[in-house]
Length: 102
Length: 140
Length: 383
Image (cartoon, rainbow over all chains, first blue to last red; front, side, top):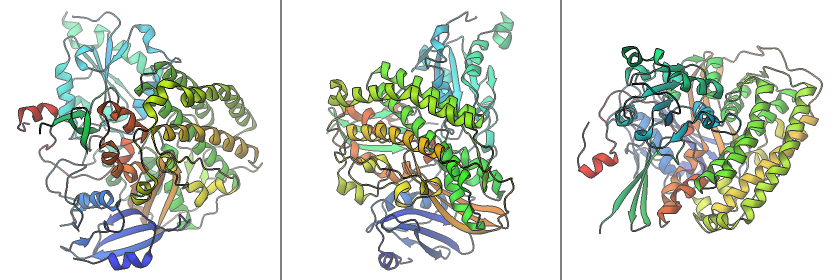
């Protein structure tokens, strides 16, 4: 599991804005944070090697539940500690093909 | 069997960008006033003569559309509104798309546009009653 | 304990868009609420891979019919800094005028449908009649009532003339008295007050904890508006006063949206008076080959966020996070403990725009796992 809680705590932002996944070699995850609602947002870039799971930010930001669940569903990646990760929200199939991470 | 006048309309939004839904909703305004033809928009498909469908057919709502079509009583007509219902619009070929509306239920009148104007939609609903446009009409 | 599952949707007269809401009811009180999504799923983000930037702009504008211009502006806010393109004053003010007119028409549509939910059909028709005047303004300015697509990278497609600005001014003069009259009704009418005050309450602490955005947060006391905190484009020339209330219930959310309509009218008139004499630059302005950026704008429903990655003059990835997704986590929590007769009013007061929310890329075949009410009572799934 890839640990990111300490990196996110160092940024110390008020709000998590978005979680984005890009399918490349290696798989990339971008987190965007907003601090004091300023113009420029803080960005955190994480590389995820194949087959690894990622620590969830749900203990710091409560709205990470749905943002991480959307990325999890699209790419097949698991966020440890998020109860909605792995649930089907937007589609009807059990496993993913094509855009899938695994 | 023919429908002479005052058809009752049921509406299904199959998902899409909602542009065509807004223009259909605008038909019930005081400005365009669809009720002067005796047309009423009903919630249940069992009370309707004409089914208006907007939006793109995806795998989730394919079964719903067939379910709603089978609940309607004969004689019935279908109007497909917007480029997304006719061919898939800009989403054609994406993995969510399950084919044009033609492949799911038989369509009487097609209204192209992105989105079409309300006056065109009203004219299309009235054209759907014309017997020349349906195979059933030709038989009688 | 016997619990009934009460489904609302996907086809339902009170919902304009397909969403499946499952409410678990004990008596008339809602114990738990779940939502089932995916009916409006179109594969928008998947379609925007490996395409030219102009094609992607065309597709981004068609993500939503109600808030088309705000998606266009968020995309341009992410892409234009990559090429260091300077936006002249006329282009910035014109884009802002269209965005604010869109906010007015979206709030009026919302007000009309909200009155319809409460059973007040006359107010619904009144709001729709006034809204048609704004759509006529769009028709004159851009050539289309919905999906204006007036923006290009670095410039716009048209110049607003003196007659256009006078027409906007005349339209607002004919609308203002009536809108103030309707607002007095909404604030003082007994039936509306009984149905709205105290229902669906969201406290300030909850709004901060879940990171809510838009009028929902501003009605709970958080003064966050992207136009004020992070001014972009024309908002550097015109000051915006945010509308904030503290009660946090359905009535407060309604009044916040109605007051924002008047504020937007003032902004449009001030912007029109500041448009300079110069014309918009000729297209194309500059080609963009490489870069990565993020942009955000204030849509009618809250903060809209786009993340764009461009490689070799083609878009590789576009990520859209709409305000409805940001507020989605609050829906089950605000419905818990409420009465079932209040459910449509509470859901409508959060202003969901389902078509904006469902654009995740999908994946191929499979069996359906969604249970309709028919399947539920039978106790088994069938295809």
